[in-house]
Image (tube, rainbow, N blue to C red; front, top):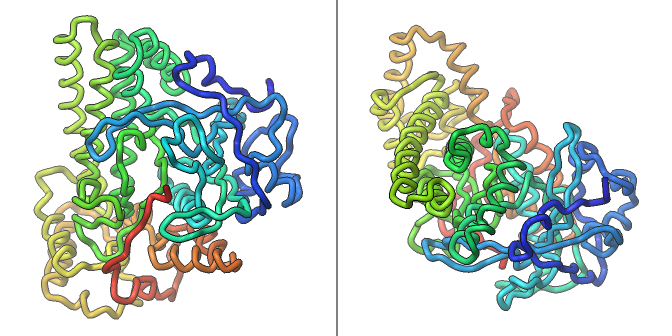
Length: 483
């Protein structure tokens, strides 16, 4: 097998452009994911045995193997509802690496310089934004949520201008693939039917080969992608994650969390919580993520219409029926997840009043999203007056009565809650502290935050989880996309 094979280049050239990463002035290794490196089957090179200097040179694109064939990928997308031609404007796909089970994963450099699709941008990334992705993607992995992962962050020794002058960096990202809903939109809106068919055939063979046995492979493919997204978005909602920029070009076909730009985790609960500086109208607010996922998948369904059936009306009928099913799947998955957060399996929509009462109290009081469920477990360290509120205490009594009615033992409910509710998430102020320290050359807060994120469901006896909450809440806190 050649070093870093590039199966994507079997597609027509309209889907990619050959690229070379920009040379880094003074590459310096900042973060290195040894556990991830050891899980991959590298050909010829052995990065898990390289010196820091060689790692820095390789993972900023400085020392490209002669056989490698790096590319940028073309795609489009609906950004805040508006269709736009896009592409990898600051990312280069080095190629693929084998996994232990014989599969392959993409190896991509993010922040590696201008490409054909940069649209006037500099193609660079800041150290802070790449370290944010490193923290967040590894936290998602620890939470058991499908995600792209971060292998390395290398500072380039160059300055990048954003809200202020910052140090530049390159992130090495690992993913099942970088095919997006927006990739299919690009083929549907801007290319030929033959090119759309080639993208479909490549993608279905790579990710969903079982669909080829279906009577209607494109429709079966649509269903598989939908189910992946139902599971993914439900998981985001379970842990209080706000993606921040759920454009269709940021929805991964294999169902991974991708593009950690203005993302964040909830502290005080608010259904309309937005942290992204560019989401002025709250399109991608916390509670809107379920509906936006449905909207994005409708865009995918539209792009697949010519493949679903040659008769456009019949294709629309079949796709619409599948989208109607999606609504039911999403509701069922979401309600079941909420039930598991309070230790009740198999909760259905008819049980929603019990949950709505709790979430209304949380909304009214801005109760901490993570710690409310820890307090419900009976963790004894909480002293916050909010949990002495009569509305909460009354709800807790109703919850315990519901467990009795359903003949669920409290210990069984607690076991389910402990598997469902994380005790620790990378809270915004802790992330910012780690990033600020990293700017000043102190990496220990970053390493601690990443390390603890790999075991987020463990309850530590005597730990004061209440002290994780930010003083003064998240008022005024903003995140940025990094471009």
